[in-house]
Image 1: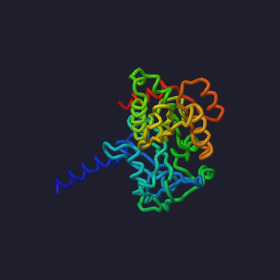
Image 2: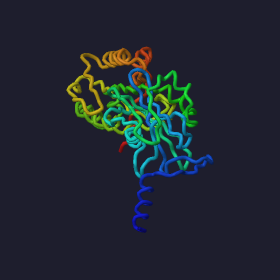
Image 3: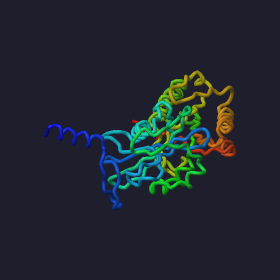
Image 4: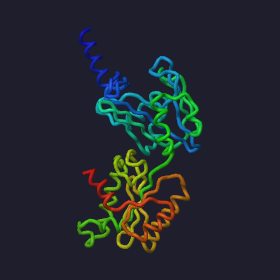
Length: 302
């Protein structure tokens, strides 16, 4: 019996279940922090959970979510909890961004995502009294969980919006002395591989040139524009390669226009140090960051 009790205690610790009293003086759920999934669909609705009466702040509406397990990434926890509470299939979720509320010894991560296909969410946990797809403009009218209500105005700005990163390959490659002039195609392939890692790992918070004032992390949709000898560069997971039919600048401007036409609300960032190109893409509604910023992101992966 003692062995069974010890095993149960170890299982509870590993699961992360339990309250933590944090520096703000309040009690929060999750020994290792907690995470929630802010899932949106093409109709500009978000998935909200009606919390059961018996749970903390029961009867309010919030996101599917819960405690992180030991050594679990917040985004993995958010997707797992959405599956356990709302029957959301993990492969229907496309991560776009995340933001953290840090209380020192406790952290809550909101993971923003879009639905890859229709999701008929339903309450499958005793912690949930129901699930509902709610239009974005109606969310604030619901009796929301206190912390979600405080976070919603900031979160709303980024619901359903991707970060599209259009990279001027020639300009970025030329910013580093790695022998690119001897093998432009090889240099483009190396940059593509690094960008694929960035697309998978995500851009961490802290870059003021990106949307969210440095607070949001992003999983970017990367478009690498190549020209000349690098036009044979193949795509990679997370990286679409755009071969310029003529000059690279015109291809980048065209790509910006295509993204704007396809999804007008997406955050659009162009990476280049070319002043004339900068003026052209800013006029088209893009934000511009220099190669130094992108190189700093890529260096963080090493």
